[in-house]
Image (cartoon, rainbow, N blue to C red; front, top):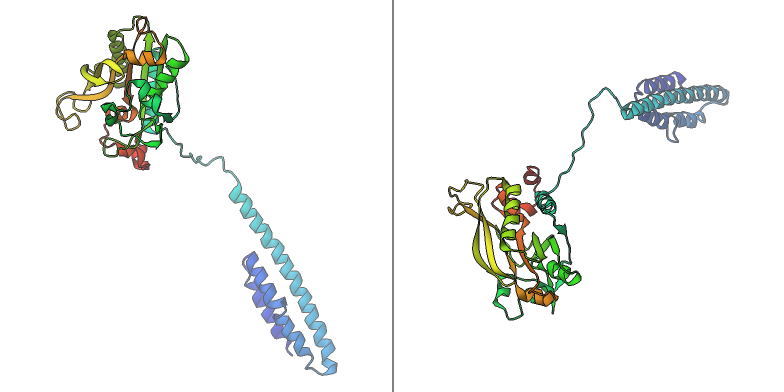
Length: 336
């Protein structure tokens, strides 16, 4: 048995170690149950009695030396690994910082916040109501009885008999008037729902409706409030006009148009070459609505208006497809 060959094998394996993982592999290769030293120890039995003692002492001495060298290498490489981990985790204050990505408000939220800011600056307070609404508040109290043809104007989600997803935020106006006496000056922002889906309609969208009730409230007050809103939202030089229209809960009623902000009133595809864009409906509150909430229509008057937030945002940002707001495409949303 040549112990020199065993020593050469040990030296060769130890010199190949470069990492802490190598130390563990070499320990198994040399000192494991099936390692090199185990093979030599098993072969001692084949020697003569006189040589067994001497060979055993030499192998045990080399094994102890090998264990000590492996332990030293393990300590050394563990120290290096720890140093690398500490260096990697250390903050270098001389390096430029990593700026985290910061989210931003959705364009609909930005537009809604601006609308609320404008109306609250004009003295309106914000009122809210349930999205799941009784048929009475959504239709009947607003002078739209069950057999009224105006119901066909609003494609409604019916949950069960007498319960709907609100098709507008007008029910909030009824609930507020039922709960307090005039004067009333509120806006009702929120989500509304209709069975409709195309480039200009979505099943869920947002509205801001307004209501002002007091003594001697006139149509000219309505025009003044809406004129100030348009100028704040779209610019002081933005023209607007009132067109006669029909709503069952207001009389007289009017649609409000603004000069097309895309073409400057010259005519384009967005405004259908008219130079005007419709933005909202409005009118003086119908006497029957006042009777439904217990107000004396002989003593007070009021006006109401309503507009789609998405419609305002589309005009404001020049967007031609309302569905873009709901695709959650970061390339689209990051522009605002």
